[in-house]
Image 1 (cartoon, rainbow, N blue to C red):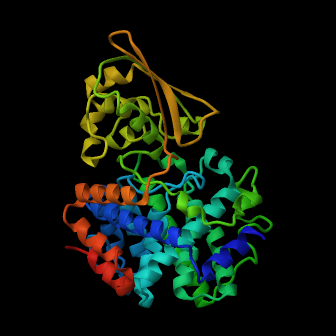
Image 2: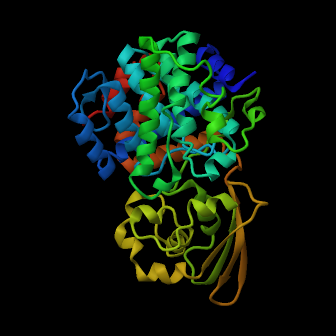
Length: 426
């Protein structure tokens, strides 16, 4: 079975695993929280001003704003929900799923009058599709500089929108082919507004490509894997077997409890038992791929602090909360006390570690040494995870988080437009 065949089957699949559905609803809640928390970010304000003036039929909700055409709402909501870089991550896929796929599902769901439960299911199958495409592309795709949240994620957004639009298999094949010529996103944008925009582009591409196919546009028979298709042109060593699995891979999703790059979270967790403390040196070992992502040695802005092992280690060791987005300011990047601690941090790549692991040693000022390690892959009970995400939501958006949690708990009785009303301007 080809990856394209897998995507076609996922889009039409009526039975979805209960455990995957439960995790998808946690992601939907987390996505809505992150989006509402990000509505005042500069990238969100700029996109609302830009796309809000385009006109068109207002069929989908804008987070913190009015209604816009589906494509525009998906783009703004995607960028807005990724603005804080606080959304979920799938490490096998090497990307964020909810920020690029939930906005497409919600916009398409509102446009056609779907139920809220259908939106959640569409997100789930879209996310699973994105994971399979990401695995087929292989890690070399990410290491080469592509942002899989936007590249593989665009295919997931297309599958999600197509499911809600009720596309035929032939139309979905066309939509995926059209997405192959639209999907884009580069890691060179990390630390700038271009990174959250990548998520918005993925969501907008999904709505557009599914909409184009729905209107009758055709494309290459196999724009994904065919000659000069997306995978042959964007992957150095594609692995089609990696996309095959008898189980839903979405259940391996991980959630952020710190408002910074997920590649740094294992380090933060490893340092928490040590902090706050005076250190002479920190020698940290991490998966080599993270060195080109979150090892900015001298961040210049609050955004860049989120991608700096050394600065984040200094914050943890100084007792500065990493869970609050308010901790990541330009002033923090210029803090001489943090700079002094950061200079004592050495980061090296260790191929024996996975993307979710760190190891190392802290040398304290009194001369003692302490080994540190952490693995984000360690399982977390569903109830404990739900409790942590509710606490995160309350910290980010206050009592409004409880309204979102109640809504996610009764999706079967709500419509996509009901969800939209919860996200619109207060």
